[in-house]
Every structure is written in structure tokens, then in C-alpha cells.
Image 1 (tube, one colour):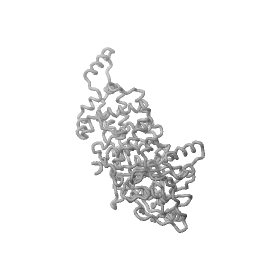
Image 2 (image 1 turned 120 degrees about the vertical axis):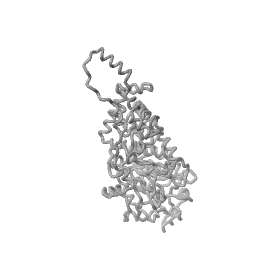
Image 3 (image 1 turned 60 degrees about the vertical axis):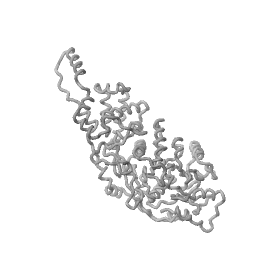
Image 4 (image 1 turned 30 degrees about the horizontal axis):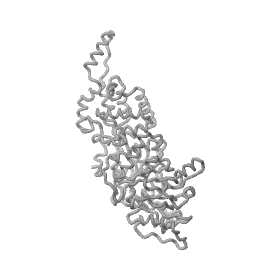
Length: 543
């Protein structure tokens, strides 16, 4: 698949010799260990196949950025990198927003354009497909359903999806805290709505009084946001069986890494949802994976497409959590590549964590475009190129590259003509996708949604029937009210003291009777005590 451990191809006869500056750039990519081939060096308008541009396999957990204007070849770059990672035994996660990446499972098609490109860069091109699994958020689209429980999604990410302000986000955190401590499992959205409604009822209002309370106005905003969210068809994303992110860490029988493709075309009109869901997947991996430090190759490489959507209108606390997650997940063997149009789409603190850069062409048609271009140039190391001119003149499938070398130092900036992917550069048909999904070993585990007893059912069951009230005087009514307040347990007391609740407490052990430990985003590992059809144990990586 890769020529990285063989001698570089010779320059074609008649090709101009590399000047000293270009030879210095090429020497910065002469790695001794395993490396992935991106393409060949461009200098003074000529492509030099004898000067390959590569990325050491060991630095893929140092994260990266793939950027460029629409139509410049970012998707093909993802495909090219994913193929070579898979060939090296590294699992890959790809967010496929436009539906263009499903072809990675099928061999590519030979043709004049492929032969021309492979000849230019010195690539021994051969068609090849790669082991792939296809997923879909909540089962909307062609893929194995990926669901999360409301409990594991957590209040911080949910607040971003619901577009809550800081005060409302804090109140939502209080609601999650209450549900955790009382063992009221939040599996789907109706569970959350039931708990909010209870905490603003006459019976439940006192429950939060000692820790700040929940105002009726804030509760109303949360409930209205939940209603609008469901009206857009979002309820399917929350529920069981919850997806176990350990299933992204798989290899095929032949040792190649499985490429997990999250098909998003069916929800591309809901960008805030899928970008936040991607962050949940990453946070869940962070929550569960053990530390491994620096390794010869990453455990997983996660490509986060349309990354700017994650940062739009994000609170300072949310951005801090992203920065910390990206910084710390490196030592767990996970590399994160953000894919977007310009580096300015990514906050500076996050951008500073990204050691590998593939920058495709930028357009400069407006004053704002020129400003973005200058800002992008400033994010690169000092270069032998005129980057402002170069970045506006790159063709499709060409990019400016700088990565971390084997010694951890940045490589020289290299204009690069990229290789051609060996898998199919385009989508496969819907019928073929569906066959692949039904044939997956994961289909039986996740395909069928399960709606077991949770907070909604317990709160509904605990509410006593209301008998017809006899006619009585105002005085006897007040006395009855005082007696009830002395003698009758609150609704929560009824729930907690019921046999059903005690049985549930025994079955789910440590998750009941104490607050769930949450990670940086307030997420908590789901599983729900072994829900029918659930993902089960979580695999050897998590145990």
C-alpha cells in the first residue's frame, strides 16, 4: 500500500533538478520509521516524485487539521489517509457529511486521471477496498443506529444542542445531578421532560430548594426547547441500546483497521446536532480508554468533519472542555483531525494542539477572504514559499503540508501534489450500503431500539390516582391539607421507598443512590445495567 520504507522513486528523465532550498525541504520528510505517503513535493511549478512528502505513523495521535475551500480535495485527502492507516492496522472514524466516503469499502476505478496523477507523484497505484462499517445517527439514513442515553450525553453537550444560555445550562446540570442521586435514569427525552416537570410541581419543588432550586421560567425554557427538538425528529438519537464506542476500535481478520463511516447526509440539515454528537463520541472514548502514552502507532484516528459547527456560539466552558479533551486524549492513543475551511474556524487554544497540517487552496475574492488568508499564513512556520500566493494558486488535490517529525519538531512547509486514493472515489449505492449494514456483526446488537422502564415510567407509576373529592367546607379542606403535609410522603419518597425502586437499585448497583461520575463534558458512561440488546461489556480495550 505504501512505499514509505523503500527508496524514493527516481526523478523522471528531463525533470529539473531540485535546488538547495527544495532539497532541504525534502530532507525534512526522510523518516526512518513507518510513515504514510501523502504525495510528492511541488517546487517552482514542477512535481518531484523523488521527493516524497510523508507523515510518521507514530505522530498521528498528535492531532491535525485538514483545511481548504470547498472543492479543493479535502474529502479525498481524508480517504487517502484513512486507507493507509487501515492498511497499517489502525482503526479510523470518518464523519461522512456529504455521503462521499462510502466508496472506501470498494476498489477504485482505473482511468486516465488516476494514471496521470499516480505517474506524477511516483505512486504504484492499484485498486483496493478496505474493511468498513457504516453507521447512522439514530438510524436515520443507511447505517447501524448510533444512539446515546440522555444520562451519558450529559448536561453540557445537551445544553449546546438545545441552545441554552449559561444560566439554563447550569440549571440543566442541577436536574442531571438530582436524577443521578435519586436513581432516576434518563434514557430518552421523555425521561428528562418528566423529571423537569416533577421538579417544578408542588410535590417536587422542595427537592432542589437547598441547592439553588429550579425556577419555573428556566424549566419552561428547557421544556420548550425539548419540545422543539423532538418536533424536528431528534428523539430517535436518544435511547437504547446505547452505542459502545469500543466498537470503533476493531481490526479485520487480516489485521487491517476497520474504517467506521458515520453516514450523515440524512441529518446534514441539522449540523449542530451531528457536530455535538461527534463530540459525545470523542468524550466517551476519552472517558473509557486507559492511558498508553506515546506508542508506535495510534489506537484510533478520529476525523471530525465540519468542525467549525462545533465551535459556533460555544460557551467558554465548552471550549475549555474541548481543549482539555484534545490535549489529554493524545496519551490514550487517539488522534483527532479537525476538517474545516480555514484554520480561523478553530479556536487558537485548540489549534495549538494540532501538530499535523494539510492546507488545501483558499479563495481570496473578498476583503474577509484576504483577512482569513493572511491569518492562515501566520499559523505556519517560516517558509521558503510565498504562502499567500501559493495558497491561492493550488490546484485540486494539492496542499501545503507541515507535520511533526520523528523527533517531535515541525517539518519544513512543503507544497505537495497528493496521491490518488486506491478505493472508490465516490459513494456506493443505497442498496449496497443496506446490504453491508445488514451483514454486519453489529447489526443485531444495535438495530432494534429498546424502551425499558426508566425515569418517566417510575415517576408516572409512583403518582397515586386522584379519587373524586367529596364536597367539603373551606375549613375542613385546610385541615386535610395540613394532615396530608404531615403524614403523606412526597412523590420522590414514594419512588425511592417502593419495591420497584429497591429492585432497580440492586440491579444497577453503583449507578443508583449516588451521583454518576462525569467526565469533562458532564458525560457519563451508559449501559444502563445491561439493557436488552445493549452493547454489553465494552471490549478488551476498556477492561
